Image (cartoon, rainbow, N blue to C red; front, side, top):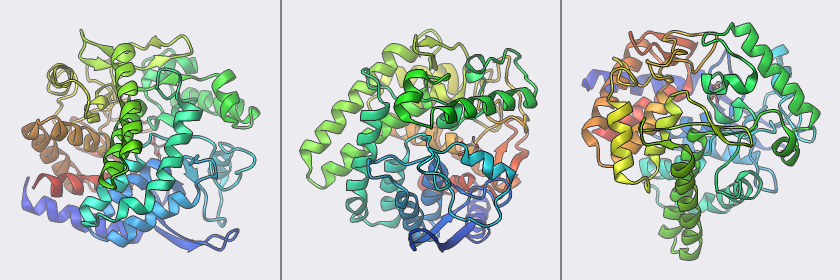
Length: 423
Ligand code: GLC
């Protein structure tokens, strides 16, 4: 990694804290809010996993902002622990797209928060922000609310096998991934954006008819899947909760989280893992059929500490370091290069080939956790070069490093955490 690149990332992150900052007072509760929107033009509201990633990146330049970003997200936590995937703070200047987004809300929450979830990476963000800020008292401030959030997931979303189900591609965070095509009724490897978007809108309407009611969506919703990225982050979150409780000497709570992490990790291995292909696959529908589409989600269990060492080794050898699958010049493509749906520059449809910094960051953590420090360093070097070269873009062409999608995109600043963490 060139020292110039690391300082360029720092500057980009400082700039992000100015351009994407949203500060104000919530008219309804009178409470202040402070968060980074994912991108000033395309995504003006607060998104769940974006804010978690923003907090981690921001912690390197403004620890106070990092904590405020997490507090703002938690301000929208419901009594029962649920936290929606989008939060609408600014009432002014709503446009047609916003109104459509609001349709993704439970009527009772409208127009404040969505009724969907996003991948659970909040506990990890709290732990990492505390590490970066050097503030070991921070987790204690959040633990009770994090307990309620994970209890909601365990009680309302986890199946008997310990795996979380998602009821929309938006919940998996990888909106247009080809792994979801069949469930949406899309057959072409390179569908028209219009057709795929229309299918997603139809799904939104069908969930709205169910009032975004969790039990109804799970029981009768038209989309039901167990996603490897969501579940890897769930197991990772449970392990993180165990570590944070252990540090507070809450041993019984820590053991509870550990037992749940083990159950989730074992179910992922049993149901999603293919030893022949060295990767994890999406389970589609209530019949849990494996979807034969190799995406970056299939590598995410690397983030899980209790993933057996031989499985981690296989995923790395068969997928991560294979030039026909994921080792492109600028890793990691969101879909394996050998998959017929792979499209290196797809802009209108996301998650069908381009590289995203958040998944690089997650794999980087996993590599370090499993002792593959050299590979983690290589991944950092390429990610940092890509982001320093093209700026903070939503995603990048994995063959050329060209920046694609939204500009001034928040979570791409995670490259700074990789650069600082690898030093
Ligand atoms: C896109 C991404 C989603 C993200 C959102 C805001 O919809 O697929 O994961 O949270 O943008 O950046």
